[in-house]
Length: 348
Image 1 (spheres, helix red, strand yellow):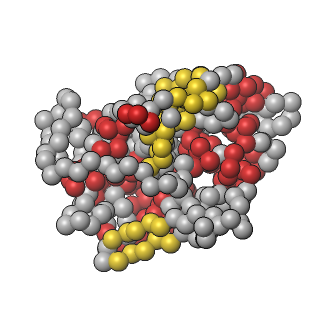
Image 2 (cartoon, rainbow, N blue to C red):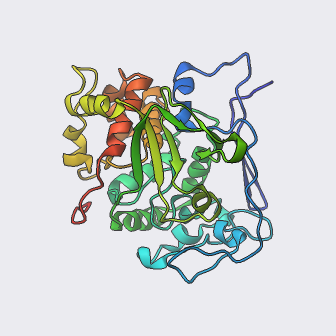
């Protein structure tokens, strides 16, 4: 099968179509993308379709009801045109307009669609809630200037994030960053050490458990399988209160703890030196505790491969240069297993 290594984001009448192309047989994937395929979760085979519904849908503990189109901000069959559903408006401060609605005329997707109104996000993207505002502003600038890209060019939402940042103003960067900083991070992922995991398929950057006759378990191998705790509530309803389960290999948390806390006999550096006590961040150095292991693995690998650049990423180069894919797996298994910061912890 012929395969290209380019991602095109087509914009037609305000419709954003992200098209990923698969590597050709004559251009095999590099080892780091084979070994960390679990983190990038590129959909190769066509997944089962999501159910269709024109009915008003509901979730527990909210009187609000939305159609599927309203949930995903779709209008007249066109994606990214209106504000996506906000099921629990009492869970967060008032969203900035650009965060809540985006702006199709500028190719700006509503931040709330991918990252949720509460900023917790999903395994396919970033969890920006509770991060320092200066850090977040710098990341948006890095996307806009082209120094923050992914190591796997097939992961199309990197391109969507770049185009979104390019369409935003500095004032909007500040509004979004202030909003994200205002929300404290809380537990979102349950880490389970195991030898076997549910069989899954890939859709939209997520590992989704198989159902029916195809359901079952398989060896975890050298992977982390991060899956929605309730796939229907995450995928179909986009429930911002429904978190994730991260299945990690037995022993990986302990191995990661050794690397994170000691540097592994010179292989890397103690993470707390920069990321602070409990790895909850210091100033514009981000918090890395209790965050998605899939997201964290991608960032470490992107920095190691040199596709995530910029001043702050450059500081990480000596940290990641000697890490193997298995080291990255172990590190993020450990960091994701850490507790969320206490309620009184705030990012200044």
